Length: 129
Image (cartoon, rainbow, N blue to C red):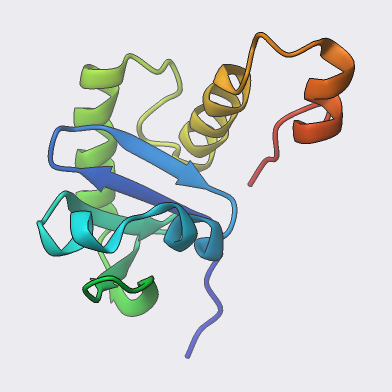
């Protein structure tokens, strides 16, 4: 099987998108009940490979990169999410979108914490893919 980037973009049925620098981070942040209820519509690596989303009742979520590639669907999901969420990166550049989404999430984390504590918990800058 070909090597794939581990960064992943997740899309929900409401048009929201999330980016994670590692597929393990994405799986750890998802709830199996939401997966089983169909909350998440799609997931892709940044190069357009489809990521299968599986959950078991009261268990962990499993994300698996497949051999299927669908860059057109990825860009369609990114365009829809851009309209819904208002991010400014070009929807045709999944890496730029992922980095922007990661940065926006990083900036929203505990803004009321003192600067020294925030840096200790979350670092000086957001991760990038």
